[in-house]
Length: 404
Image (cartoon, rainbow, N blue to C red):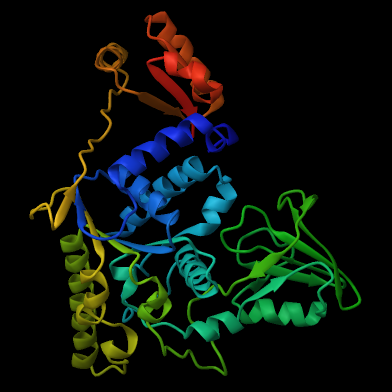
């Protein structure tokens, strides 16, 4: 998203007004009638009230809701893309069967570890998790915290100790360091590439004191800009200690302080996904037993529906369609935006109808150049349009054009 979107007072005012009128982000009764994008706006509005957990049926839903919530949070609060990406975090499932001898993909493992670390540190405002992501047993919050560290200029730590810390956190020694999850140490310089970061980080020492911390271009190895701190977060949710991976906690231990701000998108689908995964794991374990192969029992690796049911059944349900009385379910009428697939005449016709009806229409383009082109094209069809950041003058147009 460009800065023009995140700083647009008009867009912020429109979304805040809509959220307030519809009561979005407020825990309590189930909410029906929400499209996928509307759930993103609801989630962003909830972030303005309290830290929250949102559980969705699938990992594809995690990706979509995370992206939507980041967009709306930036628009609602004027925060930068980087800040939104640090505070609205995905928590996907492992996407593997624990009895198949496979390890989670690096991106998935590191995303889960980042989310858990942020939950433990209290820095996450929204965690978006799939139902299946809730089941694996985890390291205790304190263990994950001990395996993490925040570094600042002038901190005292030797380059050797820092290299050992990175290795223990799961980073792989590689020189040059140009891929996430790698690190290198050369004399008084330690490079490492934090998972999920845009650029790797170079830490320069004088003796055992950190002189500077900078990001750098992984292609050219040239410095980009100084930063005032960097976090070392384990690349796995179960840091090994003394050769043992202690799975002494569950997701419930990490979200205990979020109770009251938990939301579940399509609860029936979430329950089905959890039951299906647990059934698959039980089946795989039975196969191991049948072949007389050694394997930990399922309860040692994952929890089940009965464990997470109290948390999810007491959460606020977000549904496209829900049955119940007005006291039980609050309905918010939303509908997905139509897709025109190049049918410009049909799109222009809808905009004209909206103008006659007195509706406010916001068009979000993916670049400033595309936004300018949309305004020019609509002018050819005699449909007034204006940049949304023009302020009050923009209200004269039927279409307010933002970038995001």
